[in-house]
Amino acid sequence: MTTDVDLTDDERAVVNAFQGGFPVVERPFEAAAAAMHDHGVDIDAAALLATIRDLDERGVLSRFGALVNAQEIGGAATLVAMHAPEDRFDEIVEAVNDHREVAHNYEREHPHLNVWFVVSVANEDRVEEVLAEIEDETGQETYNLPKREEFRVEAKFYVDGPLDGDGDVEATGVDCSDLGPAVAPSDDAALSPAERDLVLEIQDGFPLTETPYRDIADATSQNVEWVLETIKRFEREGKIRRIGVVPNHYALGYTENGMTVWNVPDEVVSEVGPEVASLPFVTHCYRRPRHEGVWPYNFFAMTHGRSEAESQQRIERVREVMSEHWDVSDDDWDSLFSTQILKKTGIRMGERADANTREQ
Image 1 (tube, rainbow, N blue to C red):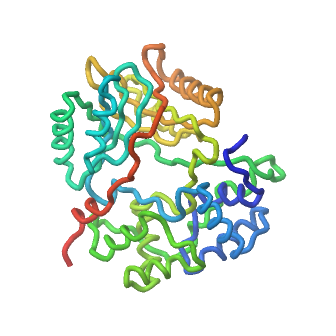
Image 2: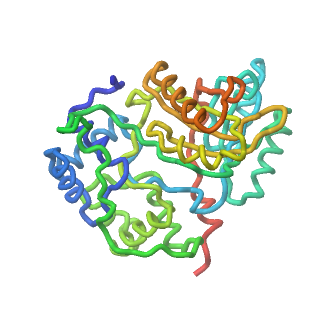
Image 3: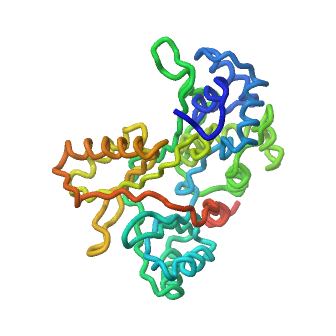
């Protein structure tokens, strides 16, 4: 595999090791380095921290820290498709992007639905209001495609590196999630004001210091024990999907972003979903609604490849899995590759967290 950046063996090992499972202890780099040593990578805590800092500064990483699950923090988000005619494309995209509720927007290859964006709101009722405003401003119909069922959200991107004795990339998926305070999940879906402040502090990443959790505690005027316990509990509750390095997949050479969509018979979706989601190169996998006469697909599986040929091979593998459950014809699926990023500001966590914060 070739990447757009040159990585040393240690850098490759670090990217592969901690795309999740980073320890929640006061001096996490010491524990993480010890775990990597157990997996055959000779690196100490100082070198591990320095490596992650350098990867972050060079843009190999999007960030380091917790991947917050906005769905569990509060509010709602939905995927929306629409048509932007070529002669009005820029005008329509500008109108869509002017809405602060639009977090991501991509142009995708499709003969009709070529603009795909995410609407993120504090109150679910606001979704329809935003879409009505966009339709009024553009004169184009929007097609709301909310997530009905989630089978996988795990965008991990590994790079080739040194091989161990079994021929596997060393240190891939080192898991230190057993380290840290013993906590039990809470049944309370709402956030306390202190928990809200913690979410907002960590949403863009952790400090790259020897003691990131202590620094987070200082920034939120909490003690470090509370921060460790709360972050560990958020992991258990699903408010945090994982903790570790978040690669910039474009920098690692994963430039082919294919959204495959399928018209799966409703009666087999529950069987097909987990099997497609188990494919290691599928990063997102959902059931979404159809729109009669316009959009016949009810199943989405996002794949990423490092070349067009690799991407096509991976899509064909998805089709093979599908074919084990039903007779897939060429009319039953499509693959929409992104041609340009039109907007990418991220989910506005503040408003969603505020709306889900209880009074003390």
